[in-house]
Image (cartoon, rainbow, N blue to C red; front, side, top):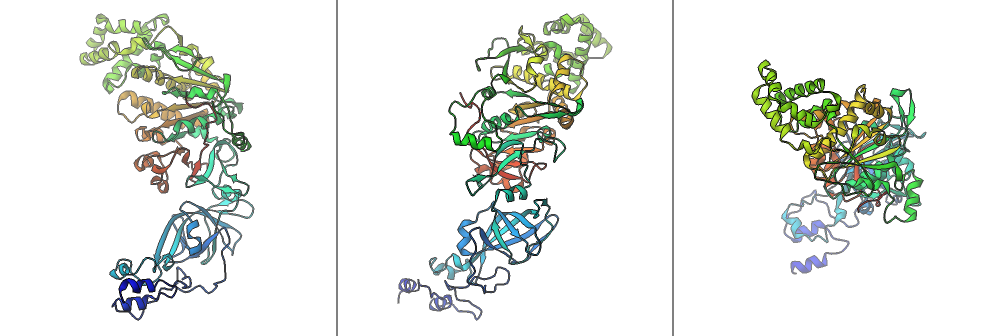
Length: 608
């Protein structure tokens, strides 16, 4: 009989591997075992047949705890594996949350599936020539054991408390999927209110329970758990271009407007924050208006039912556009023009240093700036007056003769300051930013600074001036009126394209601004300064700044970028496949690291 006919005849429920091997002329060992389609399930740990054939798993039960080699928990690693019977295999996926009732105690162990694998049930070697000769239809999935490896996250007590993993599940304990919103909240130790970010998700889809109930995810916004609202321990929103950073950022920033915070410096006084946004792409003035095309009413009601905010902030938002010679802002239809007065260089000499001066040259520039402001009447604190000061050969000769400034150093400073674009940036006749402080820094307001109409040097001067004013006012006892005003209210500073301003580059200007912001970030809790950094290049943000950020909202990105951004290891390989709206939140003071699904719609105007 031909092999093809033999194979066809053997496609029945009585297929026996020993007979098949014998017909193929392969010796059969005494220890071989026939592969029966009706074979009893084999225990993953002992290899013994299951005796209770009549037991059926419930709809949410996925299998039982098994021991392949070892079952253990410890302070730093765990080994808990689950035998998945054939009828449940198509329902189980990596990332799903599960619960194991301990049985001998009232607590439940909460975990997620971190790995799925098959192992051999019988002695048939997949790599042998014999396996090639046996039809795939004859050696099916039932000849293998599927195991799920769990990562335990916490233990849930009967009275609704969340504990660290302390007790080990017994072998053969039933394992089931989470059954309620409360189990997810307790198992992941989630806040039950705060700044709404989205819904807890697995593999891109929100977890849903009876009645289409989803689990909202909030960033803790009060002092009950951590001692301070987490917005003041800083937030990173990062992802590759096209993955929805601006959409996510707008939805998140909208939740901040109208929140209330206590001011430690002012005896517990409660204030609403001023939100300041650095906007390189002229997008965030959309926070003022409702979406051009509103989502379905049901979606808005669902959002509001979980405490989320919807709709533009209206007159709370103002746009402030810097003036640069030869350039004009043409974005939003209502805005206030301003200029950077040269007097700010007295406090921030690096505004005219750029990236062209080394450490020695910058020290000399600081000396010249200090002397200029000391010798010059306040009415003449202008860029043109400083030009004349540097061009005064007689004045400069005094510095050369004393050895305070080297001739080559003076030449480098003159080239940088006199031939640069600064004459078109400073003192442009509009309202000085130092006089607009009452309009910019208002309680319960949003101040947006678009910069896409400026030259690269103009943008850098404007942004660094704003960042420096806020950082100094929040970290020092600044005597200026604008400094006292900024210190009065909580300030949330959102910086889009943050890698351009808080960069890893090794110039003196970059080092100084990074040092200033690391100091400001460290005191953010006490001084009520919160940073929200938005970037598609987290690898280019200075590590000193990144180290101060406690909450990371990570969208689709490559593994190397994910590692740099601080993504948990088990998410780093998955992040490149995240589509718009899908994100990982890593916030140790808020919850376990997890995946959430953001809103499919923007709660304010998005796009032109």
